[in-house]
Image (tube, rainbow, N blue to C red):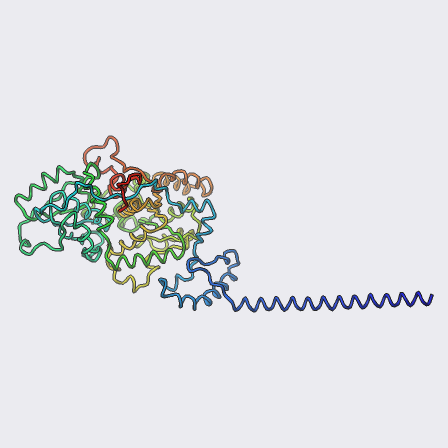
Length: 549
């Protein structure tokens, strides 16, 4: 019994020894684990892996606001030295832009519905084809000089200048650099060379038309034939009625430049010349091009973006007579402006009728509903291509609440960078034009001169995505929302997406006149040449004789 008790006692002691050893081993392993964790934490606080220069991570998107802010501040501190070292490689945006989040293009590409929003329409192998035919010759001997008084805003003048290039070719004239409109609503004192690259314009057209900067001194006091060319005229009018003026005059002055040339039924070489003038020769002045490129680069830093031509300025509303959601005082102010602007022919306008027919620009609030229904997320960067919005921040509040990443040239550029252009409406409009042409998606709230010019340019460059709102259809839906008969949601979204499936800039032939119209109304109803240069300046890539411009 004593022996058995001794054995049991020895066995119990060994078990206690084993448990003690295991306990000590566990403690050591736990201590090592804690040390490793502490070491990793220490290293993570000192080492930072830099993101690519083109895209920052978005791991903060789903964190609480306070945590996100703290991480963002730490990130900015750590990136400061890196950004300083890289400043020689990239354009540095104004400080207030550094805090904006970038739309994750890679994530967008992974999401099929988001990808479709940005995907341009198929160009169907249409490329620019503006080279002259084999029968085209150098400019024939000049019969005289053509002076041009342009009229309207920037894009109305641009189209008019390009038409005057073609008219100069038709009547064998030497074109004197056109005079820009200084009497319009905007009262811009800019000269041609302030807005456009004058030397490039002259040199680019050397094989088409002789262009000079000034009328020869000996002809300064010569009697001039001042003529307002007939709107939408063709070859016969210019080759007979206008060209016959050379028999008595050495100088012809065109009193107006807009819509003086037919959209259709002109020789192919004349149509191609219009495109060479518009999309090649008539380049903006170097200073404007440089700031325009800077603005585009700063928008691109935030990912793919929309250029929104928000035509909701005082002059547009006064001209169109549109007063939806305006106060009585605002409506009266616009009416007075319209009545006091002599060259605006229509004075008495029914705003309700205008809106129901789709003749009014979308309001900022309506644009927000439209973009939301199309599916654009709230972090979509939007560039506002416009002047001062009528009603200011209060009228923009609803759109800003939906899309806080709204930018403009005034926000993207510093005051010093914009200083040379601020008092010149045409030069400021040129900056908006450049950003709009280069945007991933262009959305005009109204089909005015700029909207049409940008759409045509984007078609010429490969049918870049342009979403043209069907204002007549949209107004019916928006009115139902206002009356409480329709709510935003899937049904509204499906309706708006369906309506706009074929309004996104895909290739198609230019539209002819509306059936049944006659006289000037017939020409007015045609789609303008510069809105859609197909088929004249865009051809399928199937022919070996076709080469890009």
